[in-house]
Image 1 (cartoon, rainbow, N blue to C red):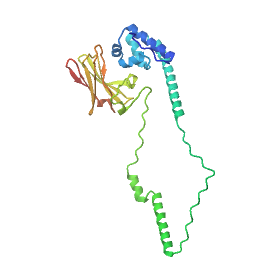
Image 2: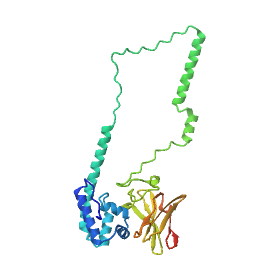
Image 3: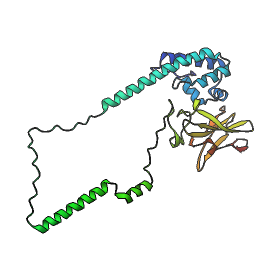
Image 4: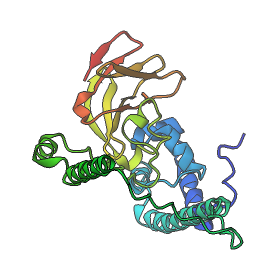
Length: 291
């Protein structure tokens, strides 16, 4: 069975050349994706997407690959820069095409034209002149009341109303929309329970906020400021090792389930600060520890 999948149809030739170069480097090194992830710090799922042309590898991953395989990074970065420009152009074309489809499918609602043959509306009837003095008096009094009420509301209800409004709680402002970097698919609570690699929250957007070592296994709290979320990860792990993260009452867990895998991570949890999260590992050997 071939190691690599066919590249996606329509992939820009410069991106295809870059991916082919990455594949040759990995093939020459002979490392599995799990080993590659362990050595570079970029997840196995991410490398699978990079090497199959489904996601452009970030510059940091390219530099890390060059370092762990002893490859000259200069020509590799040059290829990456060309591929990055081509990838951006492809994304722009896709966005423009999507917008064109949306606009072409939009329905234009127009106001109905007026009928030139329609008869003109009749003017409202004039109020008959009152003939009884009491009726005239009541009408005049009613007019004074209406004028007074209108003035009351036009002046915000008078001094008392203005004072109450000034002292009251101001209307809440609209919640600002968070601008997400290219490739990032969620932020905050929308990220809870989702895969950090599939949503683009890992790669160049992640830092290690805290870590401990249990035996030979590294336990980490991984945090993405771009996604306002964090997750737990274990590295140099073995089958049966698990990691769990806790933020308040929310928990997420993950573990190594396949022989040969050395990395596992939990789904994400929304956090304001990475210090809110605690990561705990329970190894197959029975050892336990938390950050």
